[in-house]
Amino acid sequence: MFFVLIGCWGMAKTQSPWVKEKGSAYVQGGVNFFRYSSGYDDPQNFSELSRPVTEVIVPLYGEIGLTKKLSTTLSVPIHYTQSSGLDSDWVGISIPNGNLVGFGNVYGGVNYNLLKKKGFVFSSHFGVYANSINRNVEAGLATGYDAFGFEPFLSAGYGTAKHFYTLSTGVNLRTNNYSPQYKLNLQWGARFGKRKRGWFIVSMNTQLPLVKSSPVEDLQINGLRQFTYLYLNHQGYVALNLKWGYEWNNWYAWFSVGGGPGWDVGQAGVYSLSLAKKIERKKKV
Image (cartoon, rainbow, N blue to C red; front, side, top):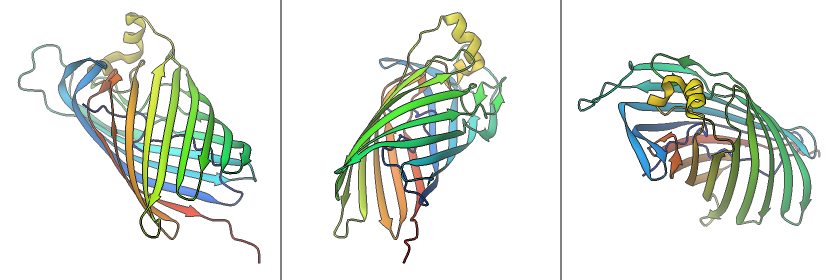
């Protein structure tokens, strides 16, 4: 079974160790879709939902190089979330259906290159997740985590003309009594095709809560979202993501699919389509 990549926008958003050069930029937009009618309580146990949940996310992402070693990142996810009609076989407690549109947790950060030598790079990152979400409390719907997040990260990478490898790790320290999250991301990518315009990327994305709250504390934080498995306090996962891309004149088209076992997340595959543009700094003549 697959799980929903809640909060990841389907882009397998990881901290790249390659910092944009001064005056260069990368922008990307797309759409992610997932729908589920059951949720993981842990990797081996799940619960049925009284109403299926659908979420469509339009993630907007940009990175701009400020200096030779420093760049800035902005991610703006726009969410549409809906809970559908009651399952005809459902017996038990239920909440009203509904729908919701709003921003997710908008992210802004800075990236600093610490080392760059012979294809190897090592960088540090610091970002802030804004509590910019929308909520429908009665229907158990939300467009993100009801908290601010402060995220220090380290990342390393090695690249050649045909392949690259990355490792990034960090924590997201959150407000409103949410548990801090530990994150670990691994990636391998390769170019393919006669003109090396194709891309294939495999990544493993891990998110785990660092502190365990009591059931009473979880109920206070999650509220009726415990019935929809949307942005719960102790959501965690170990996910595999496969991405295919095509590059042409600094334009990129991407398709990705991902999933894996989790804790307190919906069971579904996540499918993503996106279009990106790399903007190079103009060389002085």
